Length: 192
Image 1 (tube, rainbow, N blue to C red):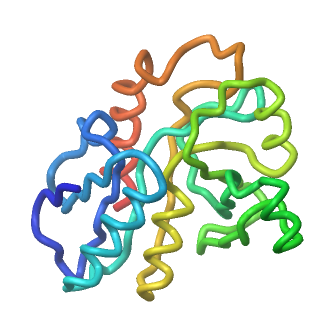
Image 2 (image 1 turned 30 degrees about the horizontal axis):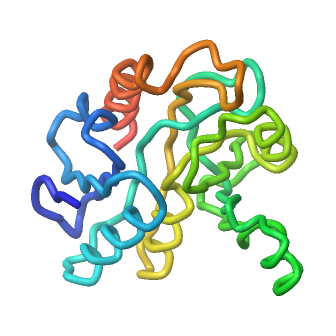
């Protein structure tokens, strides 16, 4: 976890998993680098929010894999789900297949659903299963949204498609992360 800049209660806090995704942010807003995965993201953000002051909003910027062919570009997410709680034991205990969905302020018919889990979706069968419920997949969005909402802070989740999830991806995250970071930097400049 690394906080770059000072939190200003009148401005948003940008939350990004890794420095590569934040490489083209202009430095005008504070940035929290959480590390990859749900645990790192939730612990880092909860720690910063508990210390105060609270930012005006939390904006999670990052990359995501497309679960459907042809999905490209930058997307503000309308709903996040947690996909890696899908085990037989948890289904038996809770009757649920996915973690409870979180609806964000950006909800609407054209806003994609993001599935968050602590794994890269590489198998085609996993991609197909997730595509039944979501448009994009990442490793931090649900955790960031959950921590921000629990603290009473408005949250936006914005993801740029880095690759197609599944076995047949034409490009890898490493190959596309700098281009994604440029797009996220432009989005932040134009929308925050």
